[in-house]
Length: 501
View 1 (cartoon, rainbow, N blue to C red):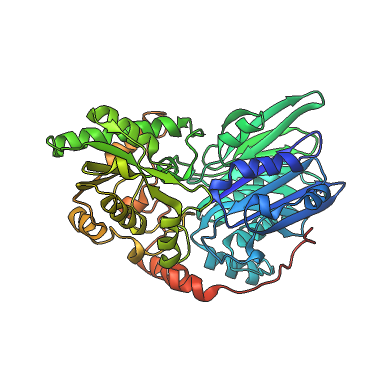
View 2: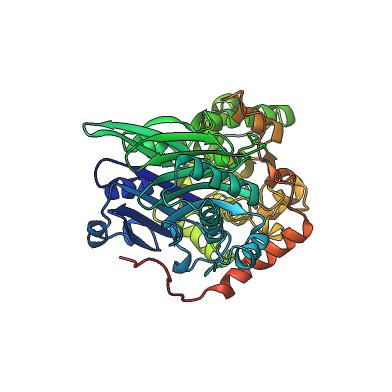
């Protein structure tokens, strides 16, 4: 999971890119990067860390130019080394930089093609660098000294034909313009917007609409599956469908957990979708446990708060804030290693004892992934004096790996994999557990936009939309990306790239 942004402006875009990345920080806390273009030269700053730590005043002063792209990263494929911080750069043709959110599922085949046929070298394990080289090759075969919008769109069509998986991409072609595109299944989100200034219209591409809002840009729309947008350095906008068989199947986990509630994705308000998830959960509890005996509903901050509030309203039960969150601790389910996650939960949350003592407590979370957080929080509720602790998840049971850009690569690290609801409840220490039904979750999201007919719900069903994910593929990524592999893969590496400011 990553956050991407690109801006074609009428003045220096460094501060706007920085502000956008800060707003998208929830999508990646591992690394950050910005590259700008000025007079045919590129200026880069990227490193591991939060946006505020990576960019100091001296870096910002060097990032000059009216066009640029930015990236915040959580490592999924590849490693967490600074060499794999984005944007990536390739000098031929034209000089192209790229930022990518998602995962390619046929990266091994592509890496082989790039080396043997395209005669290009890839210096990291990142699938994003592979994607950049595929795009560069598709532009190079057009053999144009000055590429037109037709050439750019033909190159994107070539990328769609060769690459499978989830991709939202923003790339900058030095001296020419900015291109953004979305994979043919629309798995990962990407939006475009515009802002009117005295000097003319500025354009922006970003992962979420909230980044546009904060910078005063007006949302034009989400990119359609397979669609590309090309904005020239002078500010001319072109869009084109570049995929042969596009279909709308966005990742439903964006609405469950990944996106900010103040974003609108594919015409659906994330906040409203989460309210409806709470309604559906309440209806299920009333069906299955009409005599539930719940005294108080307490959310696990922050992403479950919206669903929990609506759940409490529909059950006619008190809603209370029972946990205080330390906002300076990162998200836990993507942390590398169980030990780090366990330690982090206690640092991140502290229970307000008065809200638990002697009560039947319903804890609400957005999802249960590895179960580490849930187990510790239930234990904290009991230590605070709760009589009974019930637990409900706004999402169905996560039983299968996510392979399209969220770091859930190993089925055996998922607590619900191969287990019943009752077994999961026992493992996490809940008196009983309620999962959201999948059709209820999909209804809660699609109610916001009737045009979105289906979703990628592979983490719940094991049905992978690209059709190329089988048992051997899952075994390969599990070996490469499970917790133990990540620990052993930590290495110090130097960046071979543009000069890093």
